[in-house]
Amino acid sequence: MIDFTFEPKTTLEEALMQLFTLVSLLRSENGCPWDREQTNKSVATNLLDETYEYIDAVLEADEAGQREELGDVLLNAMMLVEMHEESQSNAAIDSLNEVCEKLVRRHPHVFGSHRVETSDQVINLWNTIKVEIEGKTSHQDDFFSRVPSSLPPLEMANEIQKKIRKVGFDWPEVEGVFTKVKEELDEVMHAQQHPEDRNEDVEMELGDLLFAVVNLARFLGYNPSVALHRSNQKMRMRFNALHRLAKQRNINLGADNLEAMDALWNEVKQSEVMS
Image (cartoon, rainbow, N blue to C red; front, side, top):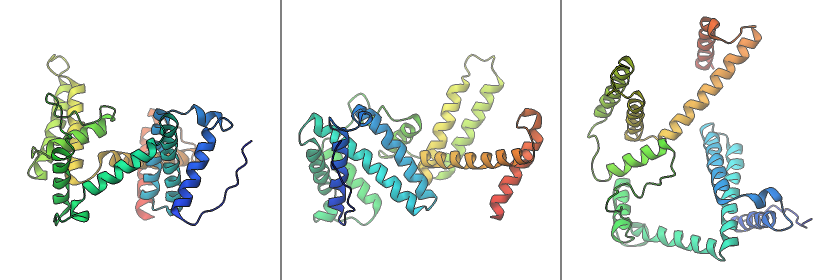
């Protein structure tokens, strides 16, 4: 048993240190077996999950939920800090020093005499600093070498397109992007309608369509992963409502009752408009 008493803290420094102390105790010899078994990979995955839960709370304007999920995000971040401290003394301190130094270096318009007026100018300045001062350039034979290979496909498509945009290879107007999406959709339909044509690849055409849609989201200024996440949540909410209505009215869900399910679906959508 570890002797520890929780005390609410009144400063950010004390609160963060209490969290770090707790994580260290949980990872200690007398701590929790589950916490000791966690790895960088498992905690990093948990960090992604908690980040999406925080996004949900933000989208729902749930302030209490945001506080709780932010705590979970910080918990997983602190767990990673503790793991690095266990394997290499002062690793966390070095990480914090490096990121603080980077923040100062990349903000000469704040901590120096460099002048910028717009966010676009700031981004251009950052890109220049990354290349000319930090030496962060792509490998000679791979323009996308700095795009993490572990990214999920949707996020990777977005990062690839952002990378291309930095060298000016982008649509001048959004109309061109809409046209491209329609063109890719037509190609999917054509490939699906001509299965005898060995040159047609429905899967590849679907990929091209998704890539074009990601490009549209980026061009309009939205994160495609967050947009899709919102749509997923909306579908879950609507179908759960449909499922509840079906149970109340003894309607079996199935292809044989498609007309009835369509009616329930429209009823759910209409109730959203009225609320």
